[in-house]
Length: 247
Image (cartoon, rainbow, N blue to C red; front, side):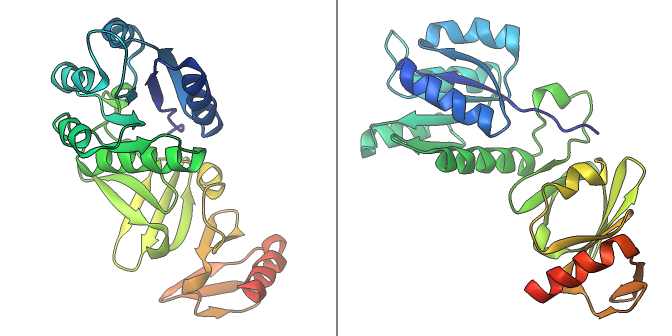
């Protein structure tokens, strides 16, 4: 399957902050559906744009603040909410918890803080079996975070840590993910996955990528991981040996 772009709505009445958040989101590969200054504008926007996640400033001008808006969204649209706040006092935090946000971001925050909050939100969505709105017609929504993949397996979203993967085999537009205990099918071409793997993975053949930490033997034409013998192409052999020396 093609990588899915996650759509995010920003509700922030300080437009300079909203623009900065929007820039961060675009740089991180998300789609921004809009930057809205008032809660009263949000419901119509959601009907037309169907965002996957909402970033809400708690202190919004108008009759409805961010917490009240989040409570409404929880009841009407079940959209995951991440709160943005410059006010971290306990009373505000306790009230905000009633809206069941997926994460909090305290201003000022940087792009890394935002990235981690969104990865946490996406991971929690997957663990709860919540599909992204655009994917509801296709429940097999596999996606990748910084240290793990969530793979649709037997009607559930299963977390597979990169550290646990022994090797990956390409099967047309899919990948077979082999761990120490299980195998999974990831609905993604190997090329798309390869670009997101940590440095301890290395392609050894057009159809195979291995986790260097699991290598048991290497010879001229193959490597062995446990009982599996995998071919090594001449074009990848030098890269494999170089990375092993650096590991």
